[in-house]
Length: 408
Image: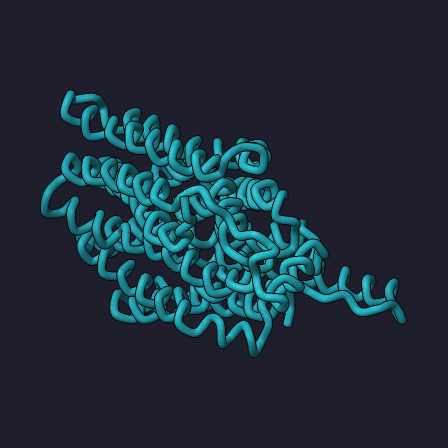
């Protein structure tokens, strides 16, 4: 069967949409029932813990077994887990334990999905096309995350939770169908043009060590996850706006990501992925601290601009991580990076929940911004130090060809 890797893009979008409709819809139920950032924070922590613990191990599984089948299994099990929430609501089960239990189950599945999906992409997409594909894939993933609030917020307000979560279960099933249609073929080195073949072989050389890239990748997870926890509390809990307003704000964030996809390749060609990643995270988190200070209209503008910067930085980091290890170890690399990022998310979520609980969301946003700036700065300094040492150790040696994901 011929491989059709482009089908992974809508599958990724649908899977991300489903995961985050579930999570954000559950968060909105808790906000309505409890109104506490700490309750929402515990929900996100319950989702992050199993992924942080299991992602490194599941990353190794993604390198040992059929990555396509792992993705399909993740989607089908997610559909069953997601359907448990509307069924439980219809049976009158208490909201809070039901919300925590179903989202915990989905989190365990997501711990396998993340490294399996990254490894499948590296397996099916030729290296010379990775930048373009990663741009489209990351935007599909992040737009699914951001647009989930539009779909979830509006549907929850006008239709209620049961139809919303039932629709959510169907999204996972549709994703499984798309991944099955991708086929079983994979790109072969000898089938590629000569210039692309040289590029593929160059990826066996690690341009940047894994540890600082995992730090950079992980702090991006922290920002987007805590943002999704803070935003409902800010708009619904403090500013007393409806879920539809939350949906509009996140839709603008999705538009920012789409714009980032359109300009990423030019930005990366001019600045290099490393500069784009570090600089984008610095600027994005600076805007992050300003978002809750000036009301809804300014928030909308800052969310869209922040998503534009974050989107480019996120895609650049993904490309760096994917091309800095051998194809056979991509699942392991993404499992480690995802595990670290979610472990950091747990810590930052707890800190942010405590800070917000004793003050308001303005201080929560500021806390996340400071932590993110420190993390990006540490990763940049770490990479710079290692690069200088490498240049000193190999002075006078024959130059090493870098992969396209490395600094340009």
